[in-house]
Amino acid sequence: MKLKLRLRSYLLLLNGVSIAVILVSVSIIYRYMLLTWNEYMLITGITVGAACVSLIIHALLTRPLARWIRVLAGETERVASGDFNIDIPRIGPQEFQQLAAQFNQMSSRLRGLFDRLHASEEARSELIANISHDLRTPMASIQSFVEALQDDVIQDPVTYDRYLQTIRLETRRLSALIDELFSLSRLDAEVVELKQQSAAVDSLILEVLQSHYLHLSEKHIEVDVRVPEELGAVWVDSFEIKRALGNLLQNAIRFSPDASTIVVEAKEYANAYVELSIADQGPGIAEVSRNRIFERFYRDDPSRTREGGGTAGLGLAIVKSIVQRHGGEVGVVSQEGKGSRFWLTVPKTRML
Image 1 (tube, rainbow, N blue to C red):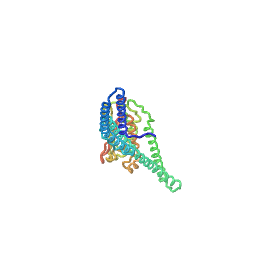
Image 2: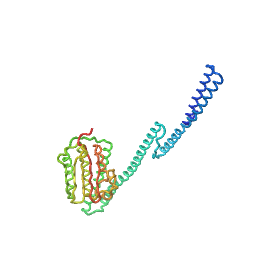
Image 3: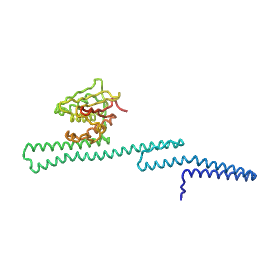
């Protein structure tokens, strides 16, 4: 059976052992050095007195250390119970102060990790709920229209064709959602290898605008392109960056009123980067939603998203993932009723 002692008792016991060794040493000295009895008693008395004083001083000095350790043990129990709001005072010897600082730093990091874990769990629950909704809505629509066609409820050829067109559109929505989910998962897992090379900014923008020409024409939207001649090239994966810009442009077209203007601009950003932005004249984004607009499946306005025919959050989440893999940043500046300006940054030269 092991003897369990407190730290303070352990230190006092060590001190007592050292005193006992001293007394034994004095006895040996008395025996072999032929001291008189009075001399022996005097030396022994002085030694015992010094030992008592040593024990008292030792006990006084170890009391704050024992108290500090009890405080640390109590704070450790709080951490074990899930309370990370810990702030141990930095008092006592230098080693104890360092230990207190490291413990406070550890609790702060744990608090941040658990906050992120909690937020991630909430986001996961929201993601599952939104995915279920986005998949269920077109599936229910397709099922109802198919059943109507199978039951020969629709006899009018025009209505029949309209039903088929609706089924086709809903199928496209499902296919687009699945493709975006697959793309986002590949980007997050870094399965997609970036093939970065020098690319002219004006060429990137021109190709993105050409691919969305029909959508722009349908809503009679004008595009104002602002690219300085001296801007030069950027170091990017052209396919991925065009995809990111395409998502931003598609988002701008979706929420822009007819016959409005979209501004596509490129400019220097922090010397080594170029900022690419797309501004629309749409309804804008509420302030409470701006910090979450790039979260996957976050909905600023569910009804408006469904009417737009796109998946909420995935397009912008893909943009964020692509830009971050390039070492850049992404953001939005918006004012309700006056439109939004989405921007991203990409490096001008190869990042070491």
